Image (cartoon, rainbow, N blue to C red):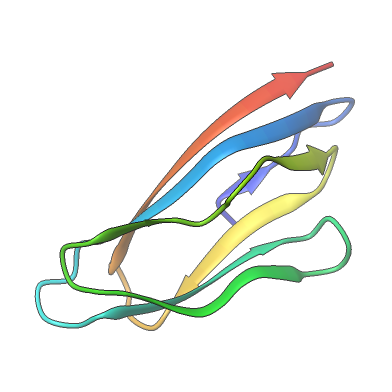
Length: 88
């Protein structure tokens, strides 16, 4: 998991971007949220070497205790940027 919403908080994910920093291989990723179990928001999504991709087309509401995570086909293949607004 790369983010867990704190207790008594609601968060809005405004931006989720992944960059493939692997020098030789395309990154095959799965981006998920635990809002309703582990819901895959992007599954088996390929990002070419040296490229970036937006992982959300809109906003994502995350409630207290829910998580966001990313799996990749190679260790250290991705850099993830999240822009999150937390409210209490």
